[in-house]
View 1 (tube, one colour):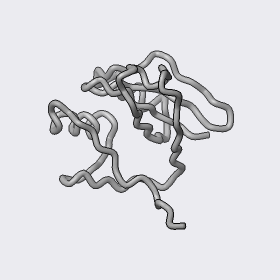
View 2: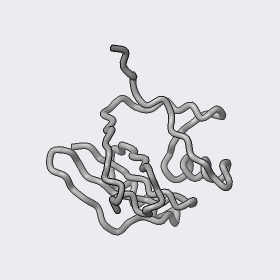
View 3: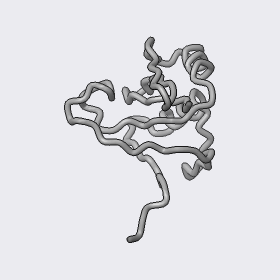
Length: 117
């Protein structure tokens, strides 16, 4: 059986695509080129499904949630707060998996940040 090799892209509609792209670059350090190509560091990727009524994604209207691996969750959350980003107050520790925090981008999409164990 042929298999997929990994995530090939993540695409979002935006009222202002240039501004939203700049937010991901300036606040999260996502270093994509002019075509959106981003060479990420090697590491685990989680593919998981959730119940349709989950509140984990924030807004019930949000059907998917982007999760970024980070090296230092506390430093990333502090950086985001310093830039005025909408950062959730709580974090979550999951034994054997890592720590999680959340930020909402300027268009209302909740994004999960994961510091793997």
